[in-house]
Length: 413
Image: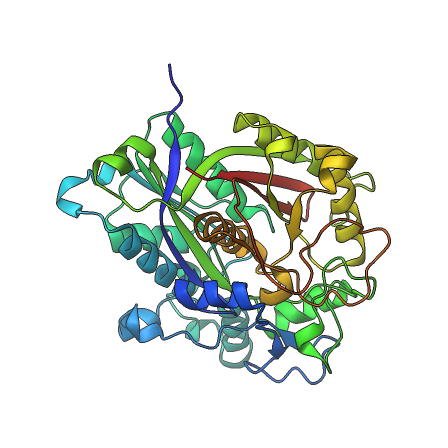
């Protein structure tokens, strides 16, 4: 039986560099950085005082005020991005079966802000003052559930939690559901909002965050010799993934094809990647094979590229392992985390949208802040400025705490 093809027909994004598709795309092409000093709380006592906060988000345009109060910020972002994506996909809802439409929206941590706020209420005012909305606000699956309610999506619905690979696994699962003919459409992606005292405090305690507080715009510098940690970001990204013939039959706009997916586990360490990069290599090789492509066909890799000392040099090794040394030197690679910061469970969704836009509009976004090249990171990272290019095949890498490796292969239709 012929494998059902899967394409992207709608996208929606809330991010530190734009909360419309137009603004997000313009930022990618201009290399605009969305990282600044934290404004949502007083971070002056923290080692890390910078983040990629969302600043241009009009919640009233997406969610009624009464409902806003019953939702965590990560759900605000997820529901807004999903509405953008569904509007972009432009379905005639009278002509599509809601049972054939699923929802898989991942998150790494979920409602951390709600947890912090309600813990404070508990300590200061007692258990009788805890909100009855606390649990549904904070549980990680709620973005997926609320999106389905908003759009009457009655097919499979769940949340993937695999740290920084969450949205990639969500897209991978969506691909398989459509290929197996269980559904025709899946709304997939990720949502996250952990720029809070506990979120910043916890990651800073791990020494995972950049402390370049006096120069936020250059703090996230993937593959640079002076990188000193990642910068937290927040937001959401949702893709409408649809069976190709189903999309063609309704005359849908198509951004690209989700052609393959690969995944693996390091089975090595809670937070550190394997020194050889072997696990990430296997995920990339699997995605390329699943798409029916060859290493030589890969045009662009949106790297995990966190700006941490370990990740970037090990991911460089992994890319060489997947493509071979010669081909690795020819492929264009960039980390859009240099502009957005690291959106944790939503990162792969944001970066998949970057790949979709690169494929559709013929450009490769840059890795900004390439100031002092690292000799151990010696590939083409599209330094500092976007590049016009025909992108036929893109890989989207995601490597999460716990050793989770995922790679989505996206292609021109």
